[in-house]
Image 1 (cartoon, helix red, strand yellow):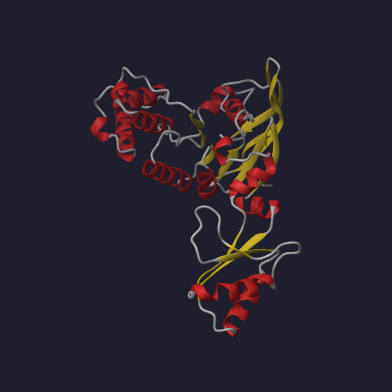
Image 2 (cartoon, one colour):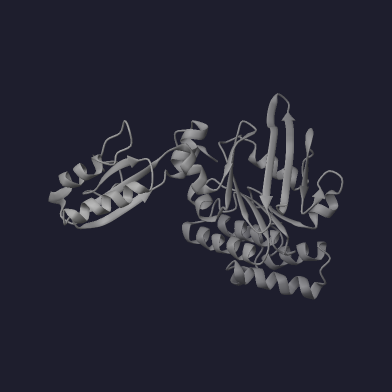
Length: 323
């Protein structure tokens, strides 16, 4: 039987007239990252709060680390770490005091709590600010301190609700490294995010939620294959031979499609693309290009982007709406 560290079945939660969760099922394998994505108000945060025992569902059941979240919430809390959408540190305490406090609440000795605090402050590049009140921190620093606080107890399951919001790109990539390190050390991570490239980079599997329902659950590549075919792109070394490349690509075009120059905003000039129906098209094109002695600087077979996946699954036009 598959080792599931998080399992939810039929979760329902209503706030007034709003059905936040409408029969949500979730499953996360131990030692993996599960990305939970969907439009604003889809129910992602509500699901996380139920799993973290901060909310009780109206219907359904869930277990975390094999423990029922409704019957034994205190036991679940000893197994999990949670970072919400907004930093929740005590701004009157220093950085180190915030982390030592969390450690003592988790029954660490003062010595062990301080050792763990120092370790995390160094990890999150906050050592120089350790003795300053958190209210003097920038928004990104408070966010990193909040993330550090969720890891004090070395949790078995980590819930990260948009953990990199407010971080600059460099710090965001640092945070990706933290997630990967936690998984390498045996933790399991459930991640909601507004950055599609983040889900693509980190998640072993992705759940798409919309209007309180799970509408897709697959690997990132599985989702991409589900919503559309692949695109084959070729860039000739000699731009003058681009019309010849177009002719080669036409021969492998998916039914009802045609090869075209890449002219979309942000595209580099001098290449052409065509939708194809399978991996075999790449081999056919390579053979034809070689036969024509047509050298290329780019030859790539692309799955649809996650942006295209979400456009198809949720009907949203922009990735920014998927927060």
